[in-house]
Amino acid sequence: MMEGVEAVGYEKPTTVQEQSIPHIMAQKDVIACAQTGTGKTAAYVLPLLHNLLTHPGSGHSIRALIIAPTRELAVQIDQQLEGFAYFAGLSSIAIYGGGTGADFETEKRAVKEGADVIVATPGRLISHLTLGYVKLDKLNCLILDEADRMLDMGFLPDIQRIISFLPKERQTLMFSATMPEEIRRLARKVMHEPEEISLAVSKPAENVLQAAYMVHDSQKTKLLKSLIQDKKELASILIFSATKSSVKDLEKELKRMKMDVRAIHSDLDQSVRKEVLNDFKNRHTRILVATDIVSRGIDVDNISLVLNYNVPQDAEDYVHRVGRTARAEKTGLAITFINQKEVRNFQKIEKLIGSEVRKLPLPDELGSGPDYEASQRRFGGRGRPGNAKPFRKKTGGKSDSCQKRKPRPPKAQG
Image 1 (tube, rainbow, N blue to C red):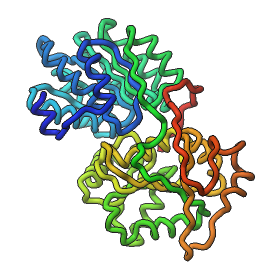
Image 2 (spheres, rainbow, N blue to C red):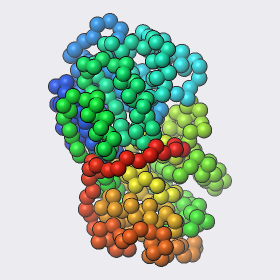
Image 3 (spheres, rainbow, N blue to C red):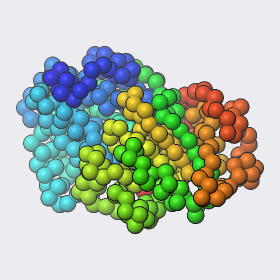
Image 4 (cartoon, one colour):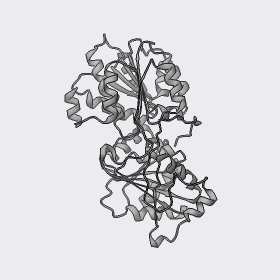
């Protein structure tokens, strides 16, 4: 195990790892709330592998199951498993939709032969479970990763159905960036006296430089060009846009400007999505344009700039988007474009993170954008975040995302 840790390059644990690992090694149930980019995956993968090694199973059997909301996150988790377990002789397989019939057959063979750890998206796992050949009677650990996102995506019935196939005597771990009431209800049903770890503060890391521009929609592309063209120091740029159609349009526009760009969205085959992510991760592609499908499912070091081409409707999605940069205590830049109608949503973001994001003036050649205060009066909600005032230095402050909040209806995914 330690050889795997050294090979991956880990030198010291993050806070969530420090607090989670001892409880998990002691075979206790754990519910952990920590924001994106804090090392949650290793916080459960390392002690999970340790427990599998120190309590060997009998024969070929599935001993641990990790459920993740998206294909990208499932692949990312499986890659970390492979890295940490490289010298340990433990096996894992990622199971997710979007592939070919041959992919399904490969998964079927692997599941029937047995793997120490399976990482799966809910729908794909249920497809295998309903065919009757998945044997989970030897399973001793269930992990729900990004539990809040799975509930947002409407996976609660699938999760409950999967749990019905599992032994009642097992260890259950739940990791989440936020802790809404529906997560707590689920925990009460499926966990036994869990240890609670709450570290999440719904705000980006302190070493993320945040800024925003008030823009008309017609100014966005020109502003984007002025911000990133010929800026060699911005070696890796991740742009989030609201819908898959806007992602496609933006990719075409940036290609027309001779920029090195690719897009990722749900219309792409899984093999193409994997190729696009790998090219971006390996610096073969400078700019990636994406929907929120990857806001919690991409693990790329040293992203120079995260740019929100639109304001996310969910304030917590802003934290996850911005969390793609300044990971592992590095610095990063996050910029958001705000049109008049998005002011209210941006106010919610500022309220959530407990400080105001600085509004920058547009370059002279673009002319003037919408007036922020006038847009507030017309489209905004009541008041500003805390005592914040426009154009002043951000005031700091915290907002704990682990506090209870009202359930949200499932959202359509890009």
